[in-house]
Length: 255
Image (spheres, rainbow, N blue to C red):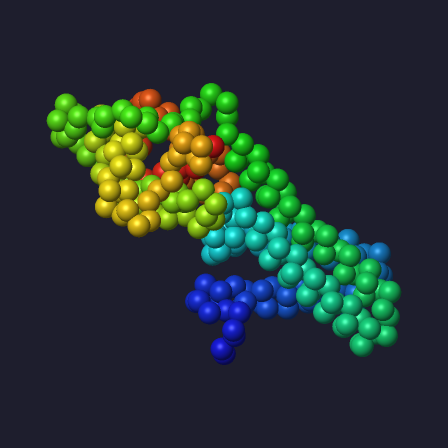
């Protein structure tokens, strides 16, 4: 099946997931046909929708983690679309089969239970993204010489990844690999990395100065699951003191 709006395997899986989930929600919404007393069917449907909503948030975080990244509201929008399609399907089912439009509309409102978990997770994610005041920003040391690598202990070197936008107004993050001596100050390595990258890529440099020439402040944190609080780096401490391990991904954002 060639869908113009689903070009990648992940997008096609997302469409299939949405269709299957709408069908499941429709089956739950049809409880009104099997349970005679609507006053029993409605709360049962809402509880079922709530359980499915919790499962939905978990599956999104496992299969479609990009929907949660970079403060995106895509997970909420995707869930709202699924809920809207399911609500229309439930209303249509009751209207055509039972000729009871009001009952269908009433059962569709139980989908609030399905929506609740995604909004809770979004609020919680916003809470986790609030940087704590004690974490320091790093500023590009304009006019300062690069650190002397010969003075460092190079017996233990980590391979890490940086993720950040090369330009201030970009939304897409780029991934970079770097080697970091365990005993080196975090900020010093980022200083060397920026200079080295910009020297090698003059046509597409990383922006570290604002239009007025002042250096941007950078915050660094370890990339992890969306449901965990961010662990911020202290640029004035070594990689060892920041508890950075091999192959860890560090996200850098301009403050």
